[in-house]
Image 1 (cartoon, rainbow, N blue to C red):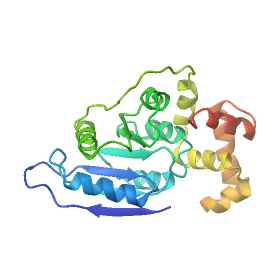
Image 2: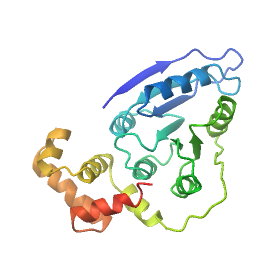
Image 3: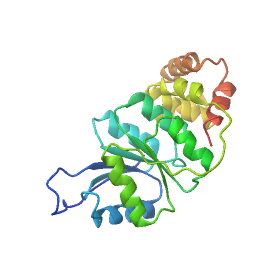
Length: 225
């Protein structure tokens, strides 16, 4: 779990407080390019940025009391399990807007992000000017979705609601189950007792409405893309 902090000076043309962004992406070069674009932007007040390389780090920051104005969440970052990470954040922290950031901006992904409660979908292929505009609108409380033609046939809202009911610790156990970890391995990874893991697993299965670990994994796969 890795967290970094970066604060930039406030743009002299604005008197409002610096916005606080949580950049959740496991690619340092993308985070650096994004911060540079926003620092030089005429549309966005130079932000204070907290950087996280995996979802566990994001959850740790939020549990510690961090209140970002916007979370930019990479779908393929470790621990996110596709859209399951979005569902978890929306369930545990509904007051914090989350925008998905992805190189795959297919119609199905954009629509699914909107369907599951994201405030926006930002393609990594956006030009800097479009990126500035997208984030400025999101910080202003608007939404940002660039849609193309297509169809989305499956319904994942019920699965997302069940995953959203998990606590942050339960979601961490859930994600490790989906990686194929045994209870003993999960206990070691999370530095908790194995009976505690078993209690989490029981609660997770009850909330998800399943009886087997394989069913947990199958549910997660419905939000993987």
